[in-house]
Image (cartoon, rainbow, N blue to C red; front, side, top):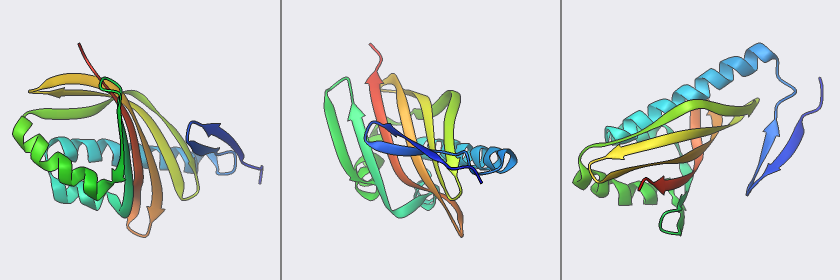
Length: 153
């Protein structure tokens, strides 16, 4: 087995997988991108049971609103408690991945860097979502979601 290497990226150290077979990595990559895509679709449609089922119980949210110069670190439970009424007020809302997400995985851990766009009744924007996932007995779960949002002008 070849050694894995680590590369520091911002606040997070991501493991570059040189250990798993290419076929296993490809399958893992497809699975984690599907989890992230489904999570955003459920979030956009306000299917809260499905959103919460995609998360580890102790999942973390790190959100930067570059347009306002604001940053918030909270549990996903706290984040969702704030966003549920906000999205209900907004009405039309969609956040979706655009382009090709970048996936780094090794064994039971994976990170997905994905560009996204947001469209809603109150405006639009774009940014990057960084999902950190772990494979559990119940499948891939999101352990942390870091995002940077920039409102369109």
